Amino acid sequence: MAFILLLVLTIIGGVLAGEHFHSYLLGLGVASTAVGACYWITFRSSHYPQFALFLLLLGVVAKIAVTAAGVLLGLKHALITSPLVFSLSYLFFLFASTYCYFRYREYWLTRLRHKDLQ
Image (tube, rainbow, N blue to C red; front, side, top):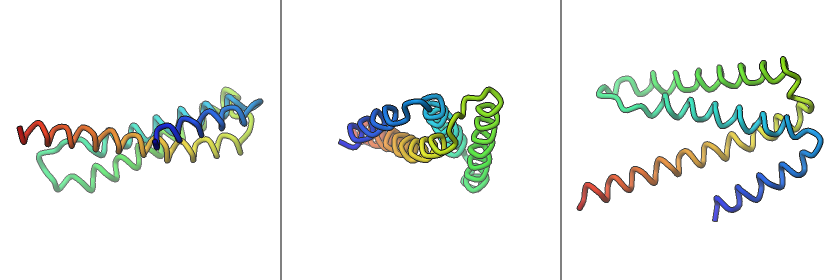
């Protein structure tokens, strides 16, 4: 149900963006890439649990770097036509992609646990 709600909100946001669709799509791309980079770095399997805080901080730095690079490239190529649409799109997709990544992780972890129990 939550995925259907996210899909409906995404479509409604795209329609409402109208003239500033490039800003909307750039917000989607930058937020999804930033959360993906943070997720990929933070949840790397490590044999040393002492590195957990380091990986978390490195993930946050990667998220900030991807966001800054995406905004700078968007401004350089004049893709951000409306800063308001971009920032709202970025904020929405930041939460939406974080939710999707964690649901995906939860799905695979429960699947692995069920496989181990059998």
